[in-house]
Length: 220
Image (cartoon, rainbow, N blue to C red):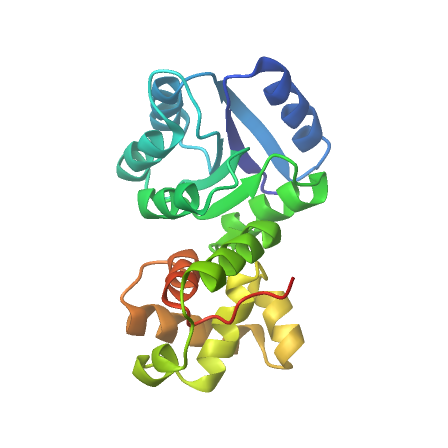
């Protein structure tokens, strides 16, 4: 079995130890290193070339977001998952711009964390459903959402539908099941979406949808 190699980056020792024990309980995951500062994180990524980095935002010497920018330059293939207490959409947008493919809050369940690692290792992006819902509600409150975005957007109805599910945190396989189409078809639609929106990842496409009002606000 090919194991997913994970680097843990958090300045709280007990938190790192807890996550390590959690991940080591999964046969397909391997913790290859730990870092307490942003600078150490970048150095270890260069040395170890992990598949995934679990990265806190509030790190000594160098913030997690600044570290993410350096990591994407040093090791473009390493997937970055922000694991943080910050439930502010501004942190989410900055993290995605810095190259993060996933954004989870520290109150996520063990299953959610492990699923995120596997999904992002597979080349997809993921937003915590609670975070996506919060962002959509905030934009519904502060922005007047009309049909203008739908008129101006080059996306088809099916592409908008898929983008809504991406913004809600669903993986390609889950989207395919919900829409009764193949996973390959979902991937093809996502490639078209990213090309039309001029973005580099499905996560960036989801953030575009949230910020533009293209995705209807979540209920609640």
